[in-house]
Length: 365
Ligand SMILES: Cc1cc2nc3c(=O)[nH]c(=O)nc-3n(C[C@H](O)[C@H](O)[C@H](O)COP(=O)(O)O)c2cc1C
Image (cartoon, rainbow, N blue to C red; front, side, top):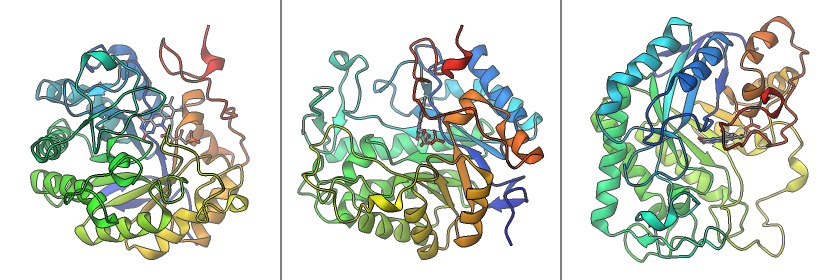
């Protein structure tokens, strides 16, 4: 029987339990993405709170392309020394820290008139009203290098790994989705071609950081957009290919590619009845975990120890990542270690998004 509170490892990275803080944009860096004392304080509390590893909020890899306010940056070497402060702080408290890297794309409302925003194709995002610039092959090459350079900076800063953000409507997810990617070159068309940018990013990062530095990826199990989006079948194929290339762990999320038209009926790969209120992508992640020989991390609605224990022992899923409840109670994992039946305070109301910093509404003055 597998236990939630047991030691495991991901490519040599020792983890004291199976709980990971899922990437959460704190909105507390400075305007250029640099570390602030307030942000550091969030990580102190998380590291004290019992999670085996913390995945940072998404960090932008290209200086001119910051998709959201006060997110973390990793676009040049000036971050290396200051992030050593962050990684030391977390390590001293007995936790591990993984940097999530991102390129935003057209899913953005931030300074949209002031910067060039890349997309796989010039397909307008209907709500942000951003029509991205279709990336040339030269742009794609630059971005691949930028993700790889960011991974190397993360390693030099003392992070324990990087996670490539391939989910949630950001650029890499849009490459995967046929609605947003209508390219006719090697980066568009078949599932293999739509995923090629991710493979190239992974290969470039791996070459720069070496075999022993963990590289993870976060992917949607499906965009739930029928054949306009990234489908579960596509996801399984990409996970298999990434596993064969050597990815160290895959975090499975999901959700529509925002602002694409809704399918008229539920796509056949979205059996709604299988999705309960808690751990709602479990059915998908279980199937993926059974198909690949790489640790799978399940995210989304993980709220009770009993349900997670069942999933852990009923599948090859190895880890559970958690975002919103840790905004409310950064010490939730410690509480669970003492009392399995402890109910998180978080009710997934999403009121944690706030201009003055993303914190639980109950913590606001
Ligand atoms: C305030 C906030 C910020 C988030 N920022 C990120 C992010 O930077 N990167 C990411 O991959 N997901 C981000 N997410 C999504 C979470 O990582 C997670 O996938 C989602 O909230 C579901 O998990 P939960 O039910 O445990 O909250 C964010 C979610 C919230 C509520």
